[in-house]
Length: 337
Image 1 (tube, helix red, strand yellow):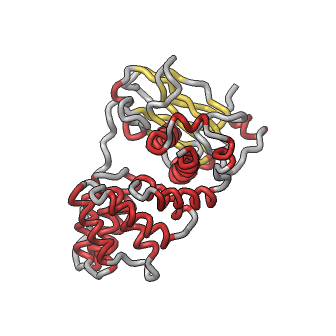
Image 2 (cartoon, helix red, strand yellow):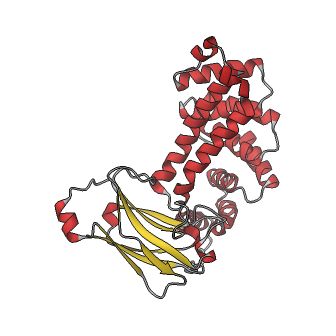
Image 3 (cartoon, one colour):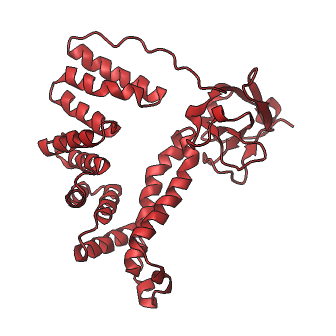
């Protein structure tokens, strides 16, 4: 069991890190909660497959601890063959196979997990997606479509199930059905994703001989929405050589409170100067939002690494305290003395 614990812990860290890495690079407020999710995922995996006695494992068990992901996969598969009744183990194995681009084995591992947990809507989508990626023609087969429909029966708000089902309908030449399947997603996703999705829906509607959707209304900002202007100090910019892949994080947090932001956005350095609006949609924690606060501290961080957590060499603007609702935009200058 000690070896099983080590294998699963290694795979959990690697797999979840790979899943969350794009959030650090691309997302807005959600990125700041990613590290919390990663830690919780690792601890949850240990709770599922580990035992406190593993701390006192003999030297032989420690020596058998896998050193690479490939070794961990081999050992985890062996453990699951001996103890095949772990749906979570098969699911972890499938995700690991996906990372190694072993698509057929990922499909089969998801199938094993699904037999043990047939009514998990998320697992149903993962298994269907694995069948799609493993298929030589990259099309959803009848079994995968049945999985997607079952997922939506169990959880009508399952976004990926709805998206993939629409993809299958589009592939089958059922454009009107695809547009109808995708349309409810517009109210479930963020504005940027919705804009991209509308293009797909309108293209499907055009193929079906239908008019495009009515123009989208501008989103209404949440209470205490905060306009922030961010720029680089000209003298600082002329003296310092900045990396082209550096990022700028615009952060609002509780004054004299915990470091976790209540709202944050990430933008490329090249976007400066920029003007943004921080609101509840930028909150990484649903229990703490701008609309709940009377005052925030706002600052901008220039990150050479592109990561949200502050590192050596990062530069913060002078923080500004703002009473909410704000009467005007907050101006932040990075590098100002």
